[in-house]
Image (cartoon, rainbow, N blue to C red; front, top):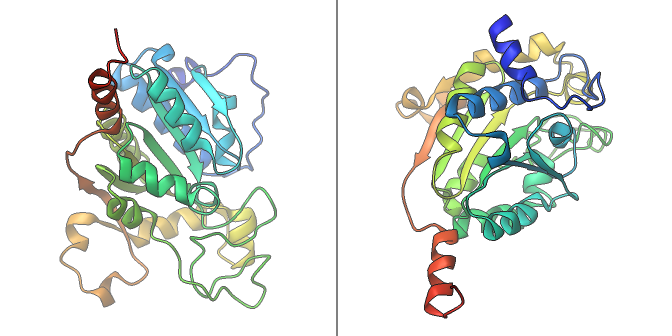
Length: 276
């Protein structure tokens, strides 16, 4: 534990405002720790990393880390990240978003970043609620659950973020929970160096908004629920739809190679005579 804590402290801003803004027991700290350890293990210098976020609880992460950081507007993190990567292809651009930020107001950007196969890594924290702004339902709120905007239960089906990313063309798609912290780190270590649009969906919890509204208990109870619902993707492939109901396949869902937009863009500039 001491060794891991020391690594994390090497990457935190000394002038950041602590204690952090997250609720006690929130999974965001687990995700941030996994991201820092993944970057450290991959050996990237801090100045090669750009961490971009939009608006939401998880989007406060750039405030605390000593990378190049950009805290942007709601739903537009991927557009800013696209500009950064096109301006300097040597940078490793990581975009951290919540489920609402990524696939509600930012949904169109998400789909087309995957379609274009932008060389970006998207880490999407899916707590199935708008936690920061009052507990409204999000595109990933499950059918039948409750929120401040669904006092009589949610009647819409939920988006499957990972499935949508794969269908739209992302070259690497993986899913973990915050309970499976070591798996989460290993998936990030594969996603960040992967060429093209890589997505790591993180199933996390909001015990203050989602948990209270649906009587799911404490953050510990909700993490135990993640443990019990998670199924390795290899096992999930052998299970029937009935057996998979309420289960969460975790692991690598898609890993392929196809043309990367950034490289195609540079080739286009050469053909147009726009490079030296």
